Length: 207
Image 1: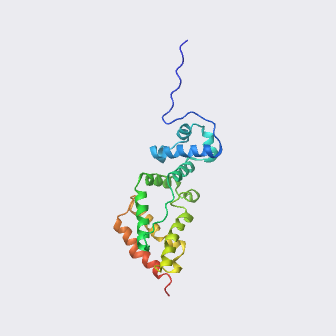
Image 2 (image 1 turned 90 degrees about the vertical axis):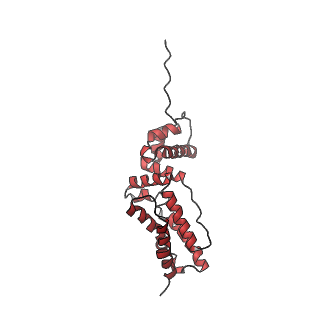
Image 3 (image 1 turned 90 degrees about the horizontal axis):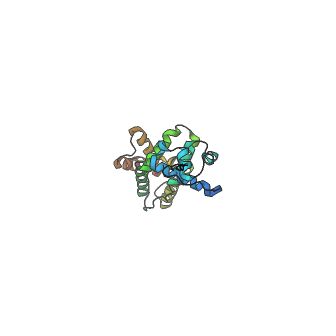
């Protein structure tokens, strides 16, 4: 009797192995992150991630009940928290932070982020899981920058408020939305800093 040929593995698939807990979750997130890089969020599927991780879809659904949750978790794996710049001046710090955000949004990772934001729509609980959208983490970075400036005497102590501290990045995001493009010209960043942000934080305590 002729021997039946063994089924071909899908590209990127690995043999199933017994893993549990943190080890399994790490493998799943790595597989999902690799899929995001290769195919973007549009090409991310539970089937492909499970095959790449060498497990079954049930392991995915127990942790992430839907594709968007998995996509956001995988994106978080691909991004890392970068310390705020310390140029020695408030203007330099704010401008460099805006330039970093500008570069990120126009990068391949930024394209994935835009896909995730579009998929999340107005779902606040999902948006809050994205590092760039989480109010607590975003405000912490800007408050750190502004806190140093207050200590140097460059900004009023009354400016140390999350809504004030994050004004610059909010204005930059608004540029992305209104222009419909993933980056803004550098002169726009300079204008945000010089014409809005610095006057605001310096005059905040003025009577």
